[in-house]
Image (cartoon, rainbow, N blue to C red; front, side):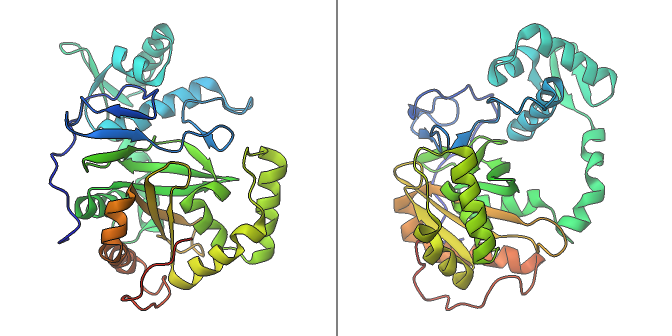
Length: 312
């Protein structure tokens, strides 16, 4: 898409260490790039490897996180890399990988000492594809939007009171924002979350906001009255657009991707430097609408495409 691409090299497929600083120099992707880890705020954000509910079986969580890591890097990985990246004990990681090989969910190359998912993993969710996005795939849509924008591109599902980042392709702009696959952020404090709230009527959205404030005790609680006008704008224009929500310098545009009448709705979003998104907002929104309309005709409201987007 003219005017949206950035002249940067695509990221390498090397493993990514846990980012502990808000801002680092990216020596694994592009030595000239700056990577900023987004959305790290106490009581608003839950890391993919963070504390889980006591009812969650730890081994099941770890196995699924391993497959999410493979989805992020899209290449084989060694046991040492997986254990380091996911902060798992080496002994339990080794035992878990061996079990997954025995069950034919992973292949193990003894020469390179690497593991990679088998086709059995791809087949597990194949039956859901046509129900979720008839005629296409989440991966195809996410990749096409990423190729057009070079921004961090992600698909989000609602997980109770949180937005859950289920598919992420990291940005490749000179300043890029790293978003952790599998992480969650409170609906009231995330751009996709506010879009999810906009799909409800005001009474239901108000109840969800009250639950978040009562059960999750965010450090900066949001009252429904504070976002009611924003939800109305999202419904009218068909997308949420925020800047500096959670991470200074970060802007995000989120748009409904699927029809909630068939199954729980999904949201597609892009995030990146505010300067880039502000300058290219019209082209980015146009591309997002094109992708959504292609697979869900009539899902989005009709708008004046020449009108400037309203921040929400």
